[in-house]
Image (cartoon, rainbow, N blue to C red; front, side, top):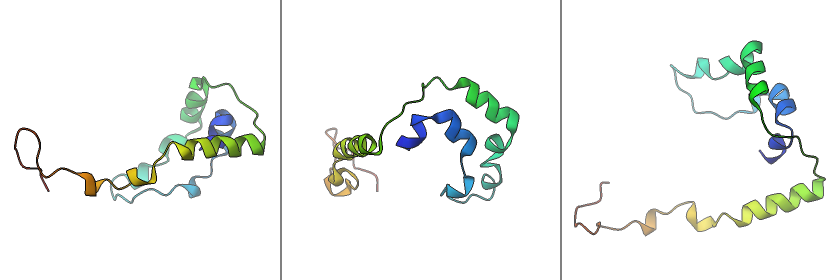
Length: 95
């Protein structure tokens, strides 16, 4: 994700849709890549990109990823054990 944003226009046009891991939906899955596969739509997306490409060394990318990972507390991934049994109003919490 970080590398994609370093040069979004190039990565938009070189994106390999087989990399996507999307949940299957009988009605939606056939539509997943309609915009990406349509050259006109993809050109409109590219024209709307307002991010200036950035060149970072592999070491700087590694530092950036370390920083981003440090912002994510592993205990925040599953907070079910911290959910209250009731709210201040006394109403029950839905299961």
